[in-house]
Length: 143
Image (cartoon, rainbow, N blue to C red; front, side):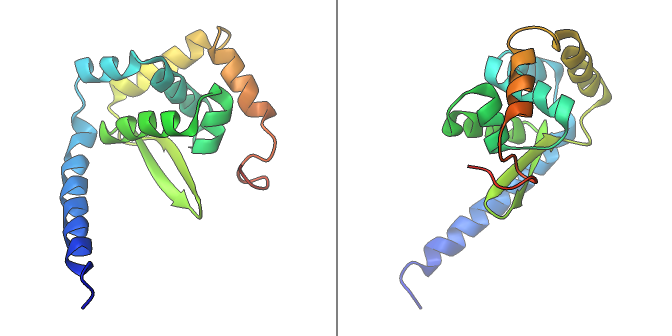
């Protein structure tokens, strides 16, 4: 047996424990935590784009917001850990969408916020950048 096999097993166990804890937090988000998450401009802009467009790849969010991929990924991880978004992997790409079981009050806040700021800066330009993005996933490939 290779020397690093126990490390892989330990990592796997830690991941399972982490995931099981995360599952229980999805439906229990409280208003103070939710609004604290929305207070960050990058997270807010990501959430409003997801509200307007459904599922988006990390590269689409990176392009639309003009931010570095590690920055976007870090904020998306925080949103996922809070149970506000879920992700799925498709090949090399990771796609995010709003959690379908988000509490109704939180879903309403996002819908109304997206509608209210749709024509305001930077939200309107985020949407325009997304629409103008060449080679969007599903069309060809993502860079």
